[in-house]
Length: 535
Image 1 (cartoon, rainbow, N blue to C red):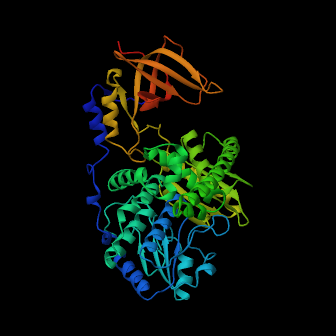
Image 2 (cartoon, rainbow, N blue to C red):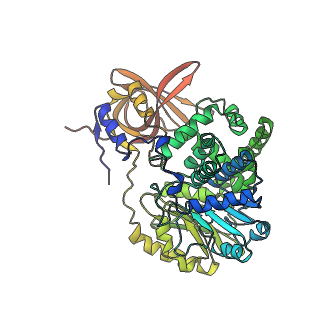
Image 3 (spheres, rainbow, N blue to C red):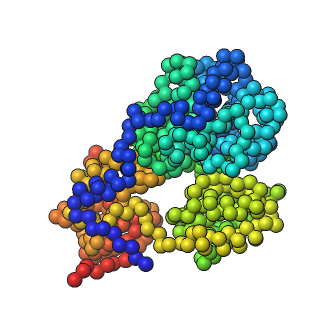
């Protein structure tokens, strides 16, 4: 079924559609809720302050994705400024598993106080061990709270029923930032909390939080800081890209994959050391290591994607794919790629000593956490949220899990034709110009919940064409846009439209700077099937 989109004939119509994305209008940093809106924040702060005053041993447990690494770095930098020792551990995905677990306890049982960031809300067993050993446990997390929450000294998680924090979709690093802000206020320590937003912004973007409500101003402030920050990690990254301005997309598709690659193929501690590098030389060395990890990640990802696609049954409403020796660290990325390719949720699993373990990514409106929750009886471990899950199960349960999940998915996720929420409508080519570009800039940063706007332009005339790249797999055009002309480029295709023809285009509007000259550019996502004009 073909979707119909509104006809856009004025900039005012376009702005009205963009403004609809922000129910609360545009918030600023002044609108950030008070830290004590979080349930248990007061209790957590008072316990941490007591530990500081009594010189107790505090151990921090992070997580191996960008959110967890950034949250760990925020806590490290804060404790460094207030001059109190903080021992930190980021579990190794392959040796330790996820978060605070019984496997990790022998390494941290000397602590008087354990803090978690971006994990812990499912750590029921480890919480019991902490209590038995007389260790106070403070959990800070942002994931869905299970029916039976761990018994901890304090739990700071905005998804608790009794929590009055007004924004549900925030990430682990934001809660870590809020915890530090509350401690800072309690101690009157004078730490510049705004400076730590450069790390918070990384996490918000990388963890695919909606760039709305308080997330928007926190990211805006963080991106401005990153552009001029003297922190060695970002100086090294800026110089490697020879780039001054930093947009949310630069983080999402550039820095975030680099940081994630450490935890995916080796050890996320390297990424945390990079974010906390004390000088530019250390940062450059660590950045080079992350680059090597990222290349390994890309190679593994490509190999597993090709193998996984061979297993796909197009009639299944949810894809459950498994193999004996897939690399565990990249299964989430490949699941996301498969989900986009086939427009349905995908779960990828690899064999372990105990059975199978893996990750899932959703697509469209399917709430993957709720879907998989219907099969908890077949799972050993499970956690996540609407868009992504992690799970493990015994080998003998794999077939039953796959078959039953497919059956339930047919009811819960019927697979309605996907309507891309980023497409605003069919635009009059006369509107394509710098005024439109500046209007779109006003609604940045773009990302989850505020996708970069896409437009459809019908019957656009192609004035010029040439192929670019060594393999001629990028196509550059000059289009007629009303009385003016505009450049356009389509990447990763050898199929070209002939000069003098007309085409229907799906595109985003960007700019291209070359030899000191900046021009508008259509970034073509797809050449659409032609649609005849009415009448």
